[in-house]
Image 1 (spheres, rainbow, N blue to C red):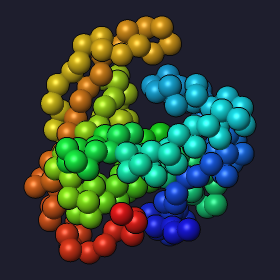
Image 2 (cartoon, rainbow, N blue to C red):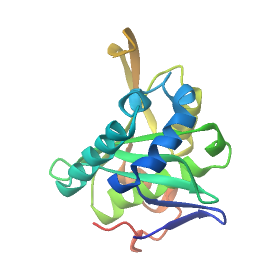
Image 3 (cartoon, rainbow, N blue to C red):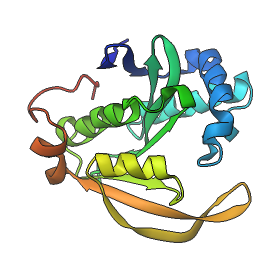
Length: 195
């Protein structure tokens, strides 16, 4: 297994089905905080459903269609980042994130997403990365802005969350906007994520 340092006390690592007990404990801590924005916590309410959530991303990774990584702060899982969708043939992906309160305010999500963007654009040669969020989620919108993304528009009442129709903002970043600017890295370097 590999780990990518995010800060002196935090790292990004793969999140796999065998880690379901740790993932469920984390989701239980994050549930009230994250479930108002995304249904992520709704999918993992017991050990079997937590394992199934992680297995679905293991299956996506095996098919090169997505993947999930956890963020550990001082050895505790506090959040994560994922390729919700990854389509190498079309050159596009969608990135998603979540965090419990203990993982906020340290720049961990932004740092982790930078690694995903390097992987998508530099290592895999994708053209476009998307970020979808509820317009009321100011923390999510702030991360998109910090990463240099552009708000493409709002899909009005395009999704349902807890039985209520909600708007979804679509933010995006193109490869030429990332390379050599926002990533702050040499585009030729490997990012540590296996292709």
